[in-house]
Image (cartoon, rainbow, N blue to C red; front, side, top):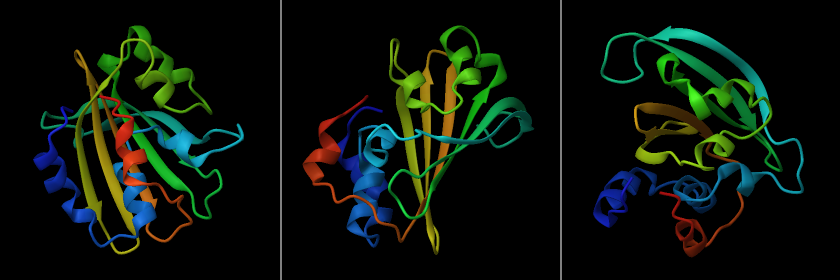
Amino acid sequence: MKFNCKNKWMIERKLKDLPVGLKRILIDNASLTKRIIKNNQEKVKLISTKTRLISNFDNNSKKYVYERKVELKGELRLAIKAVSYTPVNAIKGKVNLIKILKHKSLATLLFKGKKFSKHTVRYSVARSVVLRVTLFKRNNAIIKVIETFPKHNNYEKLSLIECRKNIIN
């Protein structure tokens, strides 16, 4: 996603009434796993992996996707839940490693070697949670990641400069 100040401001406008710690974690450009998990604890708790037929992946008709559900807890009171969807026809080459990630972060696949680029980010604020939907693209491969953040949690206090300095893509 090319950095466009006006576009980012319009998207992040939905986050204005959230606690500062949560807002900064949401707009952070660094790896979420590295921010939350310290001292090399168990990285990610794998909940499930399966292949499903879904219709809401993109604007096309139904697709078979590889679904991976994980929880990130680290030093937080409440866990952050993440679900990633990868179309089965895109699982080839390096993306094939998604099947054997187990307790590793998805960022190990996305940002090493030939990187995926962050295509779009959308936020949805509900009563007790915030959803962040991110699309990563590289050539024809697309990975959709839906993360659920609890509103009231003990998030780390980050400065705005720390959040913006590591522009991944």
